[in-house]
Amino acid sequence: MKAVVYKGPFEVAVEEVENPTIQHPNDVIVKVTSTAICGSDLHMYEGRTAAEPGITFGHENMGTIAEVGPGVTGLKEGDRVVMPFNVACGFCTNCVEGFTGYCLTVNPGFPGGAYGYVAMGPWKGGQAEYLRVPYADFNCLKLPPGKEHENDFILLADIFPTGYHGCELAQVRPGESVTVYGAGPVGLMAAYSALLRGARKVFVVDRVAERLQKAEEIGAVPINFAEGDPVEQIHAQTEGMGTDKGVDAVGYQAAAGGGTDREEPATVLNSLIRTVRATGMLGVPGLYVPSDPGAPDEQSKQGMLLVAVGKLFEKGLRMGTGQCNVKRYNRFLRDMIIEGRAKPSFVVSHELPLDQAPSAYDKFDKRIEGYTKVVLHP
Image (cartoon, rainbow, N blue to C red; front, top):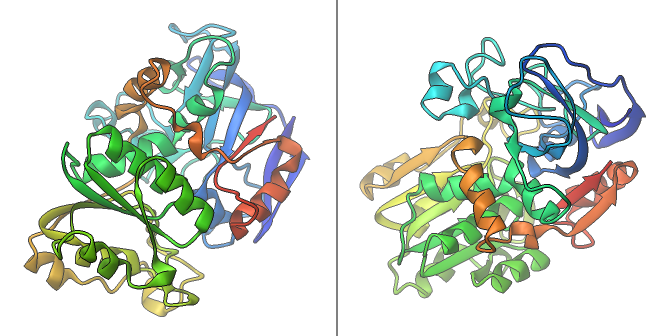
């Protein structure tokens, strides 16, 4: 089968690889109909992780079941399904408590597994024609048959639940104001989720015009940090108070601003601490890593950032962090899509055949030609 294979920094290729097979009675094989490129994939693509050449990328996957293991009880061939990016067993301590992003079974020695991602276990990615799904009864979310809502449902694999998770970490409530740093796919989903949860005003901070325009189109207030300190811009529109809540949808590869592309890994965290009012809450689904070989300084290379903890304490701020436990949210978000209450596919900028993945990675990484969210169709 064809699959997107990592070759080295800034290089992927579509190559022939072995087809997946049933290896356990609880496995299924999914014929992939849609698979998305994630901003997290870019960390590996850019050589900013320990990823070795040969990894098959792709943790945002959906399709129809082509083969069913003998131990699977709730699924059959032909079922349309979407899988959380988290690979989870469903029975370990963390899974039972709802922390499926930190499964203790699927990646021995490390809490959490994922498809096609460095250090997240042996699971092949789904930017391919077929995908093996373990613990399938637990990991597959059934979808209505047919092709309706394809671009909405694929976002249930990661970015829609992850954006919602950012709001959950910050405990966004109806009537509150929220600042979201980052207008990439997760940031737009966080802003959208805040509005779905009843936020009265949502600010979205970025500098890419197309992304800020999308934020404005869903009813958020765009803040371009290239035009001045975003904290000052937001305080000017909130009577100096700042917002009730804040979400970091950027992570460690944040730009310093001020007309430079220089990275400053802690800049978003420190900006949020300044932005959010005293006793507010921060949600941090943006990715931070324990080691970063491409970091701008020695401390950051070891995952140690200069964060204004004193100001965080002084303001009585609370902060929630960590990757999304997709199964906590994907079922009811699916039902909101079906009922017409949510349409997250507004972030999808390009639909392309799998063969065009190398070009799509290049353009998405460079933030050019309106590349915001790319869905590949094998």
